[in-house]
Image 1 (cartoon, protein in one colour):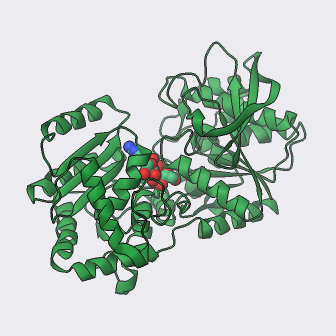
Image 2 (tube, helix red, strand yellow; image 1 turned 180 degrees about the vertical axis):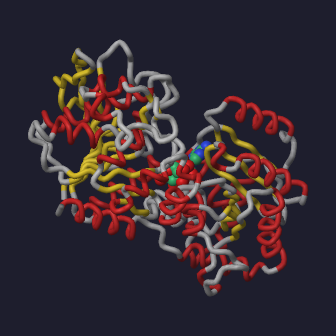
Image 3 (cartoon, helix red, strand yellow; image 1 turned 45 degrees about the vertical axis):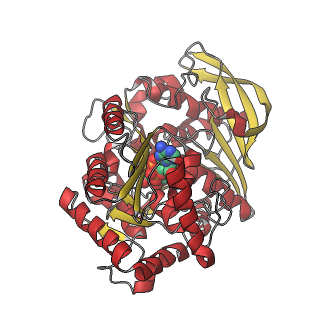
Length: 489
Ligand SMILES: Nc1ncnc2c1ncn2[C@@H]1O[C@H](COP(=O)(O)OP(=O)(O)O[C@H]2O[C@H](CO)[C@@H](O)[C@H](O)[C@H]2O)[C@@H](O)[C@H]1O
């Protein structure tokens, strides 16, 4: 099958969050299974160019409609760790993708609507007729309607569109100008059953339009698929998803075991596996050494991720203080797009600077994250909502036990050591439900209690976690079934 991914991110060159990992890992898996996969994304000025190989011009004369003008674009080609990527570079004084950051500008909707039109124009001109176009999140949600309204009439009748929702919190709320910008008639699309937002009839909801016009919609775990249809976690999209539920389903993400594997990880000093698990503790020593923490008989609890409200920032903060108050160790790696949250954690970092049981690293550091996954005993993930979550799956591969709030994908992947109905061999972590300090403390006490009092059982739990297969193998198969299903329609 010939698949084109249209995406705002791909790891590691253009990564803000887990979406980037998913696009990379899924593309790789699909290729391993004999499919042809190409990836189209914007050519951001802030990409990590050192990881793009053989970057060269693929198509220099692409003219993309924009209101009543045309914008000249150049399309570059390059390999990102073996994946075939096409980067669209618009030459406009608006500097669409030359802003030094990926997102966060007032005209984000306009920038990405343009990207959708440019991606289709490029496929048309370069004579690419994929079986499947796979779009990711609101940034690419204009593509299916543009395909249907404009490009099908120009001969692109073959491709079917799969649209994956990674996070319902960001839906691309904007004004009706995006239709005029991309060559669509607002009267046709600014309607209640199409792009009009359900809560505010005066605004356009790009994600909603993507749902209406795609052939199939997926989200990144079965539980989240349920949550967003039936609860406030849908951020107002429940009704639309209910209406389109016949073409909607949840497929659990995978992680890329080529990147996340303690047996081969180039970023950790001591490789290990199930049979050499003792070597994990050398990484614990190395982590403490690197972060100037004290070597002692204490568990290390870590937290890794975006410090976004979604991730339960107040619970992360509490976990840190609670761990230190009990004489355990804590390592935090994270960053926030919000200045106030960053400032708060900087203050905490300064206050705890001399504490030998704690390290706070603010910013994005891929390499350090590997050592933290390998060197920690436990990872805390108290998310208020979590579409899938990759960090718990990565941690388990490294024998690091997750303590999670049971929501979305976390509840599909982490099974409580004490309370799960599964046999002990299938239990792999600790869960709690109530988003309160007390519920979190209870789960932390249970996990650390086992670590101190019953090390053999704790080790058994680590082995259980490491045995789980959260690779792209199963999800890859599921996505191919979805593609086949819509291709034959
Ligand atoms: N400061 C930092 N330094 C280094 N590495 C860092 C880091 N902060 C985060 N990371 C890494 O980024 C990834 C984050 O994965 P998440 O699942 O938490 O993604 P996120 O919430 O962004 O994405 C959304 O999309 C993904 C993919 O669908 C869903 O799993 C998720 O639930 C949804 O919210 C992990 O690989 C983690 O190690």
